Length: 150
Picture (cartoon, rainbow, N blue to C red):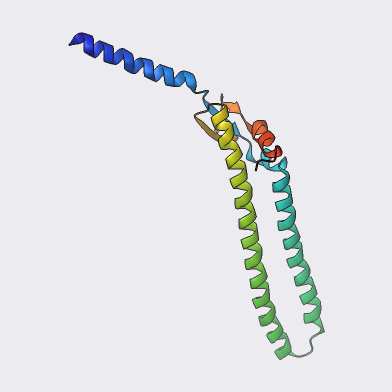
């Protein structure tokens, strides 16, 4: 009976140490660095910024039109109409921003998952979580993204 228990303990210890030997530990990623070096992300940022500038220009144009109105009733109607139109533009902007951010995140995450498998890592965390140790995989993820697979 002792031999069976001892054998079971040795097999369990061997499995635990064997599994640990296959894993390389924890990787960490600097998401903002990856984003800065990912052309798709840069294009998404440009689209979002362009939409924001469009909204600012819209408000500048509406302000000029407002100043040219002569009666309080016309001004009130104009304000209400402009508020409705701006709300629609703002909603469209928020949808675009959310959609683009999600697309960028999904592409970066897919590349990071591939690096995780290739490097045999246990997990990947944000670089701000790591105090000491870990493996920086930011450049590996950037290389994956630049390869055009994502």
